Amino acid sequence: MPLSRRLTTGLGMATVTALAAITGAPPAVVAAPAPAHVTAAREAASWLAGEFTDGSLPGPFAPEDWGLTIDGLVALSATGVDAPTRQAATAQVARHVRSYNSYDDWGIEGFTDGGATAKMLYAAAAADADPTDFGGYDLRAETLSLIATADAGHQRGRITSRTTADSGPDASNTFDQSFAVLGLARSGDLPQDTVDFLIRQQCAAGGFRLYPDAADGPSPSCDDQPGATLDVDSTAMAVQALLAAAEDGATGAGDAARKGADWLVTQQHTDGSFGGSGPTTGANSNSTGLAGQALAAAGRDDEAARAAKALAALQLTAGNGGAASADAGAIAYNTDGFTTAAAAGITDTDRDQWRRATAQALLGLAQVPLGRIGLDPPPTSHPTPTGTASPTAPATPTASPTLTTSPPPTGTAGPTPSVTSPPATPAPTTAAPTTAAPPITTPAASGLGGLPTTGAAIGSYLLIALLLIGGGVTLLVLGRRRAG
Image: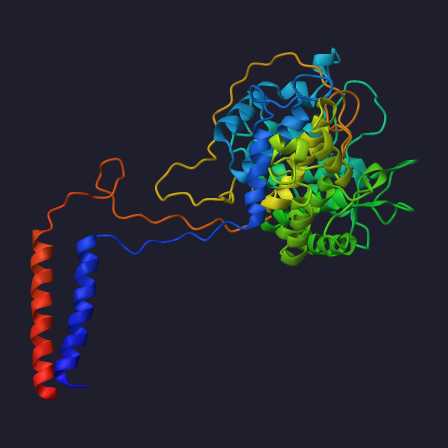
């Protein structure tokens, strides 16, 4: 290359560099749009946040349903939506620990519900509160005290309820055990016995049963129970709990989680949806949300994406909501519920079902695992600018118990209310990994509120630019002379 051309090329590059220096700003970084399922999850969470009143969600029979409120809190924590509502919900749940995990409000003293305690332990950790001082209660110590010890035989490691009277067989189920594993893993050391009991609820096919008890008493394992019913919802919960246990170093947890995920794949319908068992056998958003979340957590991305697509088809939008378009973001329990709402709106009678469906369904859209909610940044529709405060920091809860009444939970996800009072187990709440959109990068701050430097002297930059332009003209003339 001729010297003049090399000089011209070099000078051109120098000019570009100088002009970049004059502007003082790096090239703009355009954030990639959030995946559709993440946007859908945040829209669902925004709708759900609007259903809260003073930090709680109502039930069909009471102004506060603490099981459902916890479900909602977990859902909002998974998406990072509406920090003030999350803070208020965390504080309210902390004020009502005994309203949820005991029968004190019903005048029945001496009873502590193991499943409710474990679920609250997990929720406190997911909401970034202190589970060892949550409303004045050490939920970790309380949960550990409710784990069956070696003298319980094959029930060793099971989360149980405590009562001063003989109340018959314990009602705890695989949801409760999964919350115990998740909550203990998130708050400290995880006892291997607790993991082992959960693994024993898995049948050879890979799925998990909902209840460890048969008609004649607790059976040692799923395979020891003739005709055990394998349940999608329970399996999805167990897979996520075991993935968290494997991360914590528990023996056998990883293999059991993989087998569970493989079984879930075999249960997926052609449209991507899932159904549960018993009254929830038909395709529904609760089962699909839990299963999709578990599949994403287990790295089964294609199947998780199909589940998310099925969930999105049940979500109201301004375009498809018809008479229910004002409730855009809400997710129907099933296609019948969606069709009815689009035709006539969401009635007061049906609204409870929409709240419960949305709280669990959006977890299959957010795809943040239960074991990672509150640890990983939630997926965002719009990148969070560098240097801004995290939107997920909850307020420190305070203890101030008040009296509430609410009916008993069912222990399963679905259209049946998940509520809290004697004598059953609390309803499940339910989440798998997603990469958050990259943060927006900005020019160096001037120290004035983080704003970019403006009004800086540019005299020296202009002089450099003029010298470079003049040099370029001279080289151009020399180049033409040589060519002639």
